[in-house]
Image (cartoon, rainbow, N blue to C red; front, side, top):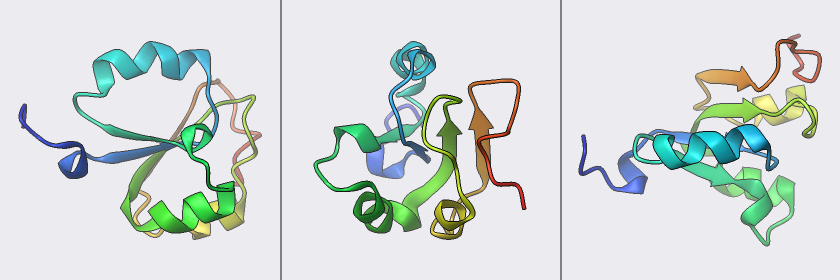
Length: 94
């Protein structure tokens, strides 16, 4: 697995830049393909539509946009959500 190209690595969606992502990325980028919405020129909804089928995990920074039911429903391959906080008030669990 050490020679995996980014397209073969599990895809992790990050909607907003955060200090936690900055700390994780140098070591985790060898095992995961990070999709950084803030780096894209596309509007967020178009970015999500474009990459929806490949996203397997979502990192939800506490000070980022709320993770709504609409976002979750638009990610059919999503298997895992993690937050950068102890709480999940910013994630729609319904």
